[in-house]
Image 1 (cartoon, rainbow, N blue to C red):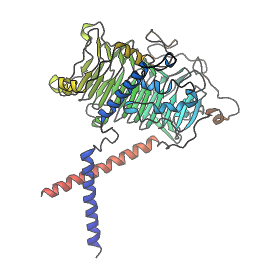
Image 2 (image 1 turned 180 degrees about the vertical axis):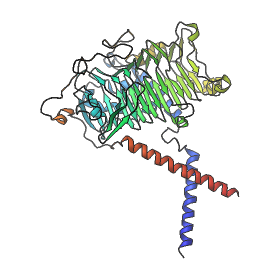
Image 3 (image 1 turned 135 degrees about the vertical axis):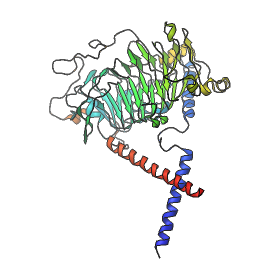
Image 4 (image 1 turned 90 degrees about the vertical axis):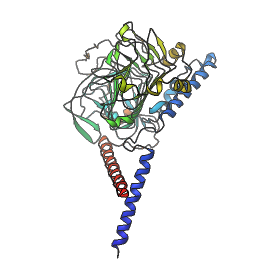
Length: 500
């Protein structure tokens, strides 16, 4: 007697699940769960904040000279007590990475030791020990230091690196890896002379040590990660990319950085055939693209890339390139072309015929073209009616200077040759006899062993959501995709049955 009701219940559950799956698919692509459903709303909000900040600056009095019109900087720099309220920075993000919490709500962790002698078992007080912890942390530095990495610096979720008030350099082997994690803020540090490393055991959480193959030598590698904000960093002289975001990464803002002395600056998207990168959404805003750059500022695949209010002062091949039909929205940038008459074009469609890229949505609004620079729009962006309906007032050169005047690490000189004595373009570093950096180590690894008393300073102890380890994130993502596949298959099966 129970067989009929149970089978009916199972059938009803199956139909309900199938219907639910179909309804969700109609409103959101479940294979790309982390992208913002309305990217144009994010673009409009960014531009609104820029306009408000610029208008506020025009009305300021002489004693308010701290206001620049840059909404990120104006959010915190005018507070004379910013150092006592460092975590306010987490409220200042804009663009697709604006929701990155970093270590907000966590303790202040003070890096006191610049060494990196044991990547599989890092010493408390080192940067590596800080970034692998499970709980949210706001990481600052006790003094100026150069951290020469032995292997990749693998982050856990919910971390902020805050270099304000100190002069911090991250260099060496592997550099920064953000893999299968979320909610990271990297602010006001130098990242340079990064070289490949690997074939070694590297710890990624307090409980997990894994074998790592050879890395590419990126400055910052973002791999299947989301809610990432990179702000006010100076990046140069790395073996591969300065910043690469691949394998379905999304929710990223790259702002106020200074890029220099590099060939392939920034890659967004793993491969033309890797469809999860269709959900990639990246904001590139208020950056200074300076001396010695060649190409990829950025080079995009799939996704939605918003490039706004940047200063492109040099390139040798092109500034913005792409393949696999990315959407590129260029607004209020200044593009200064090189003297080479064959390199005046800002844009490059990589290994693609014109009849194919004609439909890609690449648009330019309010951009300033200098020295013969020109941007080739396509798709909806090539329509005069479309441009007229959505266009912004062009930004003047004075405003571009104002918005990008503090790009890079605060206090850094701008485009004046070699910024890093002791390093060369090949990635060679100068080390002291004990294997640590030669200058400003800030090391404090001796004494009574009371590491945590030295490391954790005063700060908010407010509880925050613990971060998942990278392995848990990978497993949960796999299970979610498996469930979606089953529901999708069931939906298609039910639809086919209904047609019989």
